[in-house]
Structure formats: structure tokens, C-alpha cells
Amino acid sequence: MPSVPSPASVQACRTGAVPLLALGCLLLSLLGLGFSRSVDPTADTTAEPVATVSQDLLARYAHHRGPAGAGGDRQLLGHDTAGRGLVTEVFGDLAAARDVAVLVGGVGTDLATFDTGTLRTGARALAAATPASAVVAWADYVSPASIGPSAAGPGLARAGGRRLGVFLDSLRENAPATHVVLVCHSYGSAVCAAALAGEDAHGVDDVVDLASPGVGEGRLPAGVRRWTATGPADPIRLVPHVRIGGFGLGVDPAGTPGARRLPVPPGGDHDDYLATGSPTLAAIAAVLSA
Image (cartoon, rainbow, N blue to C red; front, side, top):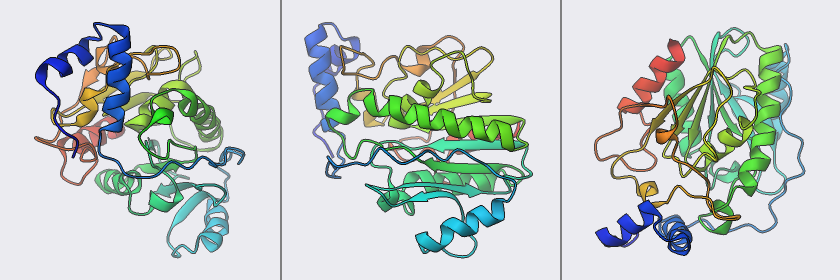
């Protein structure tokens, strides 16, 4: 765990009283969150995004299971081993579901961490809580490999947002879903914000920002509802919601117009929001099933 800063220093960071202090706090906060994955400077960004949700989903799943060495019941919509790897997995019946959640992970989300990481386990938990829905664990962007400069700026989020927009458009065009919910964890909330930065909602009805370090300018396309949750013990609270030059990820989604707060696990950590039994998971299930 990182060392606990003094109350005075935390308050100075949170208020951003001095721009240079806010920038320094941003970097120190990100570096102090306790993550240990090493940076991969050779991350491959050239793979085409998953761009189709075809009617022959069973054939598509089978096509990706073989190279992935996955079990016969896994529904892999995309799988790419280039660089750190990209993967998209579906839980539930995407061909029939009217309610679809797309989960977007944050720092360190890649092929190596996918099977046991927060993104996939959270998607499985949400799918179990909403059996009539479909839940997509979307790891089809190059995330920051570790807490550091790449996680402190919007570059990878913008690139990921473009890929996410392609996927959401294909979902809108080819799947029957009438209600789409984006569930965005940590740095993933910056990716979702980038995807929805313009006037095109890409078919999204609701956005859930969990433990967000910032969502750009905080605007959403007309008609899109925002829900937020950040626990009192989550160290992401130490990250100032600022953007100075190329550093910082923007405003706190909880302070944007119309944002509604969801309950959080008492004393929960950064990765507890989508854990089975979490009040946040139950609230997201209610949003998805509404």
C-alpha cells in the first residue's frame, strides 16, 4: 500500500490551489496507487477494432476459441495476441438480449490479466445478477500497462475511445439491444468519456463511472444518463480531477450535471465495485434491467 499523505497535502491536491502543485499531486497520486505491472513500450496499437456483431455469433465465438485455447463454452467476440493482446468476451445471449452492458477496464487490462482480472470477473458477476441481459467484457484497446505517465494523460483513452465507438456502432447496427449501458472502471471511464465526447451516443443509454480519475470535460450526448460511484477508501480519490496540458484526465463525473450516485461497498477497495454481493453491483444490475 502507498504511504498515507498528510491531510493538508491531500486537501491541497484536491483543491488544486496551485497548478504546478496539482500537476505534481496528479503524478504522485498515480504513482502511489500500489500497482506493480511494468510498462510495455512496445504496445501494439495497429490491430483493427472488433467491428461486427454478426448474426452467426456461434461461428464467431468458435473461430476465436481455437487460437485462444479457450473452453468450449466461452463466447469470445474478439481475440488478438499482438502486443499485450486484445480480447472481447460475451456473457449471456447477445443475439436475443434487449439489455446489454459493455464493461470497459482500466490500467493493466490486457490479454495476460484478462482471465482473472476485475473486468472479466465483474462481467460474470453482473451477468449472473441479470440473467436476461448480455454483458460484454471489452478489452479491445491498449490500456496503460501500469500507473505512470501514460495513465496520467488522455492519449490512450482517446485512442481507446475511437475503438469503443466502432464497437458500439456495430452493436447498435447488428444486435437487437434496445438498452445499452456502459460500465467504465477507473481509467476505463476516460475511455468511455472519449467515445462519447461528441454528439453521437453510439446507441448508449446509460454510463456508469466507477472510481473515475476524470472524464474530460464531462459532457455527454443528449439523452445519456450518468451514474457514478467512488468509495471513501478508494485511493483514486487522491487523484486531482484536473487537466493541465497533456496531463490529467479531467473533471470528476460525480460533479457533472444530472449525475446520480450509486451506493458503494463499506470500506471497499478500488476493485470491489463489481464483486459479488457488492451494493454497487446490485445497483448497476437495477440500472441495466430498468
